[in-house]
Image (cartoon, rainbow, N blue to C red; front, side, top):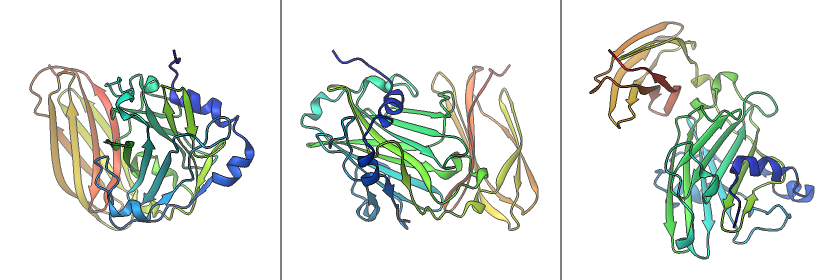
Length: 311
């Protein structure tokens, strides 16, 4: 019987023990900028993956190449980081994929993960895990209660399984204005064998991410959440006007959802007020999240927050 452990815990234990020689060989990756982002459907047939930076095959805790060999692909644009995993498996019918709830116990499932320190040695750390079932688990500085707004999808092939991730840069605290080089780790966990394989010994580095962080100049001055209502004050700290769309969504435990799309222009140096009333179908607690998008993608995000039942 293989003991079930959290992939994040496994990673922290394993990366410290991998041989340094492997780290020197595999730790650097320079993702290219893509002009055509992938359709996040779990299939690695998008043109951007053909031009993406590919890792060397993942290694085991013993420092040898994992069998079967796993690789990851990375590219980016002005709005998002895109990551794909190619996970060969001699018997895909035996993949373990039980956890269904977000932030659930994916530690017992076949899964892949991404650990990011966009501030190099300063700032927060972000962890993103996707199971073979497609279940997500994420954390900010180890806090699993944090839920980022990101997308993922998995696919099955005769030779194994694949994962695609779209990670909006707006959910990585871009107000810090991160440098061009990020500490990172990518890994895969196989519960049938208990093997945790990873891209680099210790932490690797994503190099030369030429991101214009000034596009993330929208800040929330006020976030006032009341039962049935959301009140936002967004400030554009840049000089130019920003045209885009404010999207506010809710989801209740019953599965009921609402979604409001509000075209808006945020004037440079000014605050815009938004008062949204949610057309909720029942007086039950719910979660609300929001983002402001332009044509390139998200420029500001409000992570999901809990709100009590309306009267």
